[in-house]
Image (cartoon, rainbow, N blue to C red; front, side, top):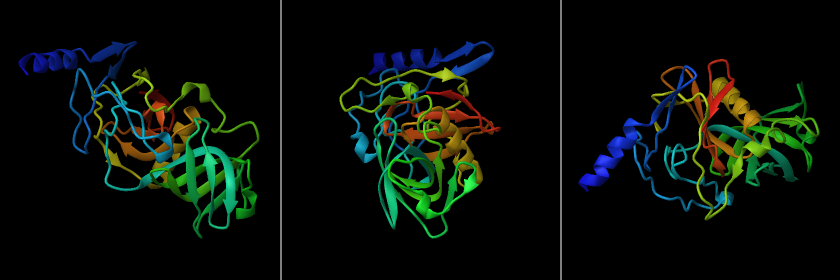
Length: 246
């Protein structure tokens, strides 16, 4: 027990790395809704299957089950539509995640930058969905049909590592990560800010499902991504530009 505690302390002390004037905070979190704690050896992830909305766990920012939340929150997904009905449709993300989209009477439809109607949603469309995420189900408030061959559903897909049961966890960070960031910190947001942060994150890293957006103490946003092996955390600044991921 003593040696294990000592190891954790050493690793935690070496976790902040200054790069090109910016700091990268590397933190592993245990399961639960409380503040994250540093760990030199997080549990290996078995994770629930991607089709059930689970995210692979592992070292760094990808700890399985970490950053738990109590209920549905603002988020979204992008992908290609499958079956379409009067009450909604299904879509598959570029990483192979299956999503059920429930439409509402107040939902906004767009095609490109213009307005559209529900009839604009057809099988095989590339769409961006914003709304309230609960696992792999999204109650949509806005659906945008994107141009064929373009949009967030098809951009930079190679950057995202799909979830595979039993596959080794991926632990890496890119860009600028707040040095004092810890999983479970911040305040869950909704509305315009959540929509803009979600859209920015999905444009940069399509393939997963955003199940919440958290505003951090520095005014930036952490967009939480499930259903993929990496990235689980996408960081968006106050101008809604993606600045880092882990």
